[in-house]
Image 1 (cartoon, rainbow, N blue to C red):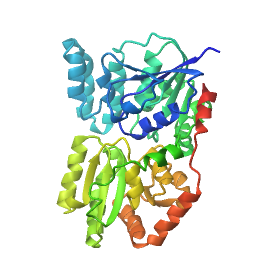
Image 2 (cartoon, rainbow, N blue to C red; image 1 turned 30 degrees about the horizontal axis):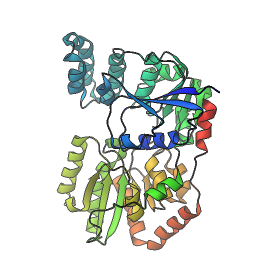
Image 3 (tube, one colour; image 1 turned 90 degrees about the vertical axis):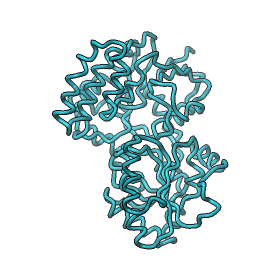
Image 4 (tube, one colour; image 1 turned 180 degrees about the vertical axis):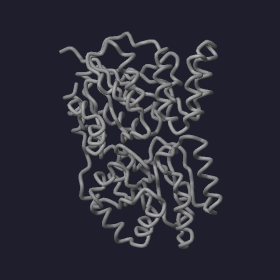
Length: 404
């Protein structure tokens, strides 16, 4: 039987939820049935070493930095990627910079249009595939539709909550219609997308992010955890996520200020990397509130599970999400959880069975964290509920095979 050729399209292998989800999925594939290529924009990220040897990893020969474009780095990114090589490309870029200046509230939508415009300069993929899978979301979907002409089937993953105030409806609608299937990672995310674009409802499917319980718990036993393990005995709060506005980490200093006023002995640890400007803003806020010593950035790590094993409370303060992988991993590690009320939070925490769902503001997050600190028995009840549950969902990989 001839193997099916698959092309996964990614960006970088950062220590983040999408990358972790991809690794879980690809490790469930039958390599006797599939020949798998992974095309990354850049050879970058701590998870590079975790890609299975059966996966043929390729990199875009040029223009990979374009996939890291944001409204904050747009000028330097495009200048280095395009203008240095061809000064005339500046004429294609300038109209979008005028839009950034004139319509600052639409900067994310403008960045999307700018990305799609400049993406046209990237050479297409000439190889033939049975299926292309835009696993890293929106930009990889744009690339898949426009630059992978020889794929029999094109499947896009939506890892985020579609928000009309942040996304360019016209652009997304055109690309969604060009996909054969659109995979959402939660029922809530699918419902929101279908409500916005009812015309693509028949293309939608739900495939949860795959979690291998045995693998996660085995890795949690590896060495490495909090650096102050030998001399700090207070409450440890943990958050895993990129340092961006979306993840709500900027709310932590205000929450810590209230907890410090309550005389709690605690520290809040953040695992992840992201925008330096956002991190600097958070640090300055922590210093302003006098809680700099209580907030500890641990950077990126290949293995966050020992930290989940040793924390007292896991908090996900995200403003919006599709279905965050870190919360699923915290559930597997039996962490008492407080999550902000992003789109799938109640679905993930079974309406309070596995943790508290707070309103998405510092005051509500503080109140729910305070309850867990004051009530060790409630923490233990959450842990027992999580221990009794079975969160292994490797069978989700079969849904991907059915889509193929």
